[in-house]
Amino acid sequence: MAKSKTYTKKFDEEAVEDEWEDEEVVVETSRTLSYNTISLVNKISAKVKLRGSVTKNWYEWSKAGAKVGVDERDVPDLLKKKLGEKPCCGGNLNWIFEKVE
Image (cartoon, rainbow, N blue to C red; front, top):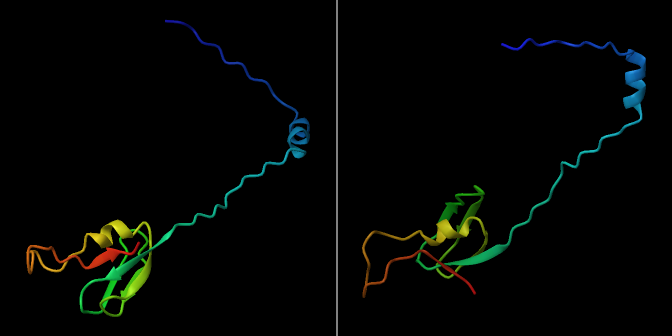
């Protein structure tokens, strides 16, 4: 087994403080992110109020045909919303929202 040695060196406290006194550290911590807004139209004859799954923002459509600007992060889950489990009237699924182009 190898032997180990420990070396200790004592520094003059004033010399160490003076060495660091002139150094200034700046850390940038603020960032602004922006996301696009995408319009979704309500396709059902009802008032719809839902919370975004990502942003937790509330969105409200007052009636069928109403358009609301939705944060792009919430759009995929909102477009998956449908009314009921079975297709109606000719085999179309009852999707609640549609993206406005």
